[in-house]
Image (cartoon, rainbow, N blue to C red):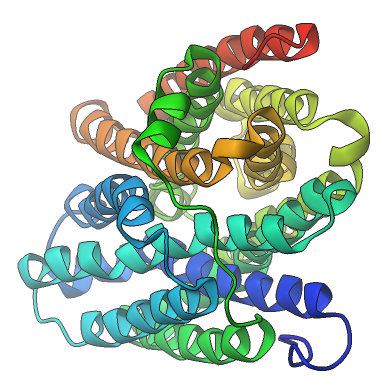
Length: 395
């Protein structure tokens, strides 16, 4: 993937956007690699699928806690140095994870590795938000987040296929290599000396004490819980319920990711025109539609069709959410973006954890109803916040 020209040549903002997109691509591949490799992880480590799914849960908890704490501790650092070190940490962590002999050894190392993701994604959004001119800020933030969409299109199917054919260790090793290359690209493209305003206690109080800003952050957590109730156990569902072959699973993951990329590209182009609050709310509604229709899909082709609304919204929703928070309160945007990243992983932990418990107790059939319930609550909260945004009384 092209990471753009060095800062001294060409357009430094364009170079930074491409480099940060590449970084999010590597981060997205790493975060999603455990879900894609879940079947082989369970078999190789001699644990149940629900047990292996706790790799997703513990990593999500680490990122949820780590994002705001590390933002507060590292907020004064030069952004280029911080983002390069976050990717380097991610690379070394995945290389070590690939060597672990058991689930007990892998769980804490996976959690520690994910701290790199907790730093990178919100700080990448804050960095490009500081570099881009105001009229391009929403579009630039959404563009950087396209890396996650590309990871879904290419990274998740490839790591899933690699895990099914060569084993999960090779999938993790591939993520380590991608992360090292992305760190090199960010080091070349970002200007030195890029710093954000320090996150003071007053900044955190202003963000945390505003119920409407926290409602927007809650939309991210609630919709994430709905998504990961199903998404965490998608590959086992395909294999055990729909009896899908490896080729069929790879096709469906690629299909899902391709529509995710289309949705995020569309959001990047439209978010400054339609407004990020309206865009985010629409994306949550599309995801809820897929959850509602999920039980009707009795085969791979039907499931592919049912998943289209969800796929279109899966990454576009968070692109819009990040732009929504920056627009709502620019003065405390770094704190809000860190909290939003935390909310992403709180949602993952809630979804993967509750989904695993439902799976163990009631089987796969219980997952879609629980996912829909989470999503409807997210939609209701987003609509309430949107009404407040339109009245101009959010802050």
